[in-house]
Each structure stands twice: as structure tokens, then as C-alpha cells.
Length: 526
Image (tube, rainbow, N blue to C red; front, top):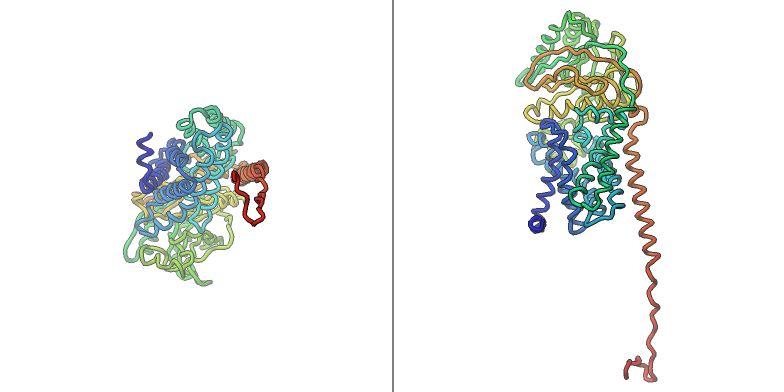
């Protein structure tokens, strides 16, 4: 331990260690998908933070760890944003600086058992507030929330239905804190073990008592994935391939056909020939087709990404314009200041326009669907709102062709499992180039994924469920609880500081020394 402490005495080596420790949790997400690793991945970072020699150094270690986490989580952006990826990671990584200070405040040295017990509530709450802030769409959205690493773990999905992905994040951090205490502060084993037992009890309670989706019916939904198509005339050639794959669905008794994001590159009012071809496909398959148009609109200025439902007679009038755009990919925040990003990467040359409201569509056959586009599937509130408005199936139309050889397609596809479990509604994640996936109302995978090397269509039998999950009913209550915990801790710290000041003995009054007849102070001993 002394050798490690001596090695970490160098600020640069310590910063490198913090960055590496912060990057470790990424191994729990797809593509590695070492979900179990999430429960110990923060331990090295916590150990480093508690050993920080000063509070200022803990702030730096928190920042460097956050930088490492954000860079590792978004490393697949490097081919598109280049050096700007490091700028984004550094800015967002700063959100973990206060958390680093908080870890040192509670766990430095040999903390008493009471402080460790408080840490099991305060430190996860602090982490949750970091995730809340960075989940704002202007900062990139909630991609890589710690709880989302548990997308394939059935007990975790049960917790998700109760408190959303936020509850899972809270408990995963609490477990990491408890394990770190067991490893580094052995005399505080009792509160650490109690914290682990409390987590196990909470998970068991959710498993036993949280309501399960009540399956009422089944529908057949087809996903069309044309694959990567590049070069001149790619919009027309992509449409041709999607048309071919959709025609193969005739006679398979499907209720809805879903194409991916940007599956149609022209406004259908400007290209009535495309609208006619889509209507013909709807007649052949006996199902409406949900396409996604990425084009400049003819009825208003600007480029929109729009989910449009097309039936046997053409567009039905049901349309959803994407509301939450990808920073730099679809618009540049503060373009007058950050517009230089277009010169170093593939940032948006022109800002796309935003929609104003979510839409639940009648897709025919009595089926009501709630469309989202691209990374909108990362936002819990959007899927919760759609379920609350009566959507029976959630749909995300996506395209990750720029990031085919990275972990991004698998990470994106996994998010739909969480949204399904949160809402108790099945979710279809349809992409142009993979990974496409479908999940049932409990978040369980339906059928197999369509990988990034496939150009095909697939039909999924999707169970429909009624009822309302606790998360849809009560919303983001774990975040609200975290705010209350932090506020209560802050208030207690304020009261404690005030008491210490009141108990401090008052300074002795200053007595002027006696003076002689000549006006000089009396010198003792003279």
C-alpha cells in the first residue's frame, strides 16, 4: 500500500489512475455486457477518492474519473467528432468533481460507522444527481446511465418497473460503496453488510410485490432492416431495398411494418411516386407502414425527422416530428460559438428543426403505437408519457450506420429493454443497419436481434399488456428521494457547523497594558 501511495504522489499519475478507474464501468455495458461487473466497477475509483490528500485533490480525481467514464462510454464518437469528443468528455466529466469531494468527505481515513451508514444513502444520491444533470438533452442525454447496464438482468428489470432506471443506478452505486468499505475500512463491516442486505431485500420485495404486466393480446409486427447502403443515389437505392424486403412480407399476416430512421430521404408531398409505392406495399401486406422521413419539408421551412404512417390510400395524416435532437449530430449548440466543430468532424452542417409534441398513432387493427426517433429511446420520460397517453406498443426508429464497427448499435438496442420494463409496454427498436430488436412488456427479448451485418426483414409476435407500472404512476420518485437525501444531509451539516461555532469559547478581552508617568508601557519584571 505504501508503494501505491508513493506512486500516486505524482499529480499526473494520480490523474491517469482516476481516468482509468472512471472508465472501468463501461465494461458492464454492451458490447462486453459484463453486467455483474457494474457492482464492483466503482470500487477502485472510490478507493482513490477516499485517499485524496486534500479536498481539492478529491475534486480533481472526481473530474478525471468522470472524464474517463464519458470518454470510454462515447469513444465511438471519435471518428465523427475527433478532438471535440475530448472536449465534450472533459466538460461532462466535471459533473463528477463534487461527487469526488463527497466520497472523500464520508470515507476518508477511518470513518465512524454512523458516517459509513450515511454514505450508503448520500453517495448514491449524489451519483443520481450527476446522472440527472447530464441527462438534459442539451448535454447529450442519458446515454450510459449506470442502471442501464442491467438491461438483461430480470430482477433488475423488475426494479426498473418500480422506480425506473434511476432506482437501479442508486442501488448499484450503494453496492459499490458497501464493497469499497468492506475492502478498505474493515472496522465498518457492520453498516456495509447491512447496506448489502438492504439492497437484497429491496430487490426481493420488488420481485414479489410489484405488479406484472397483464398480457391481453398479441400482434405481429415486422421490422425492415435494409443494411448499409452508401454512394451516389443511396436514398433511392435504400428505398428500393426496403420496398423489396417489405414485399416479401405479403401473406405473413402482419399488423404493422416498421422501417428505420431516415428510411425515406424525400418529403412525401414532394415525391408522390414514393407515397404511391408505399401505399401499394400497405395493400400487398395488409398492414400500415411506419416510415421515417428525413428531409426538407414542403409545407414549412427546415429539415425534420418525422415518423409518418402510410396506409393503403397513402399517408394517413399521423405524423410525429422528432423533438429531442442529437447534439452535434443533428444540431450544434451555440452554433455561433461552436460551429468550428464542422471543420474537425462530421457535425451537422445545418440544424434540424424540432417537433413540439409527442403523438400516439392509430396504426390500424385497433393497435395504438407511440413512436420515438433515434436516441429519444434513452429518455425515460418520453416512453412514460406515451404509455400514459394510451400507447400499446412503443417504437424507436433508429440509424447507427456511422458507428457500425463500435459498441454503439448494441448499446442503443439495449435501451429499449429498459423502456419496455419501465412502462409495461412492448417496444420495437427498428434500425436501418442494425442492431434491431424487440422486447416484451417485462423487458424480455422477443426473438433474436438483427445484427449489423444483416439486410433482411423479420416478423415478431409481440404480446400486448394492460395495467400501469409503479414507475408510470409515480414517475421519477428515486430522483426526488435523492434530492431530499442531499438536502437533509446539507441541512444537518449546516446545523452541525453552527453548533461548533456556538460552542467555541469566546476570545479573552484585550486589556490595554498600564502605562507609566512617561507614557510607556509597564514592562513586567522591571
